Length: 381
Ligand SMILES: *Cc1c(COP(=O)(O)O)cnc(C)c1O
Image (cartoon, helix red, strand yellow):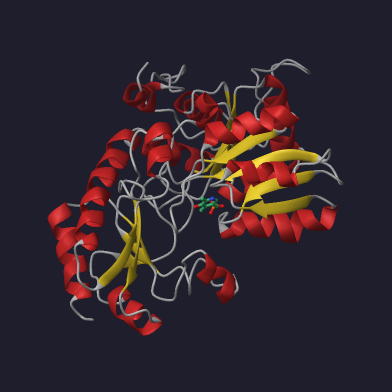
């Protein structure tokens, strides 16, 4: 089955009771048993729920995996992955990981004796320097936020195999429509479904997908034992969002390309970060491992000041000033004061994350309106 067909049909069967074509919202906490020990496969809703089952099957299919395991947020999904480790184990992660992922590794799992190393994985050879006998996971995020750097997943997998270390990829920014890390050899892929998968900025959710029965058993055990499960209504909304994933992400990609080209030609703009440009350092790898360059664009201003960025950020009407990404509506954000405010300024500047850097999540609106909106905001400088 091709991607668009899977997005609509995978995991979803007509309801056995009524024939309802859409999976019902099984809003129940428990299930009646026919006799002690005799039930229909459902005992208690933290453990199993039919709406969640349909979604988990759908997500597994989209990532070309076998098992999908859903959680109440993206970070709860990552939390479950790290909970497979024990005290003394070590993780190697990309250094510009999503802020919440960094916080989870350092502030929570650090306390339980899981040590993390953060390295620049745009050069996968760096991994050799940090691997030791305790290394259990390599955590990749690509494209990264907000600089949209690209990590070569296949190259990381090759190095990890040498040391028998598992590779985990946060595929949130690409979405399964553009990139399938399991096909590139990764062991686990996870998502903040809050973003492109849901696509309508109305659900917070996470998912982990794998081909391995051993890993899936552990993840399902943690899902039930730790209990960070999504509710049935949210699972329904996620299933509904997924049906248009291919259409939405394709349109976002098309729009993002035009926005990036517009910004590159604008006299008030100093730099545009977009992996679709031939001279972008990640372009070759992106072209190899993604089927499109994504819906995110970051750019910097010639006037290198927060005050200049503020004018643009408050000057747009369609682009809403907000955190998050991947919805049908376009968003504008200021990483230095919003998503990346907790990172020391010197560290931010090292990667190009200046006070005037602006990040765009390009939605699926009409491109002429998006460009007119940005043009008007930039004219305020
Ligand atoms: C938003 C996000 C997360 C966290 O997901 P939540 O659903 O907010 O918990 C993790 N990784 C990336 C890349 C994100 O954008």
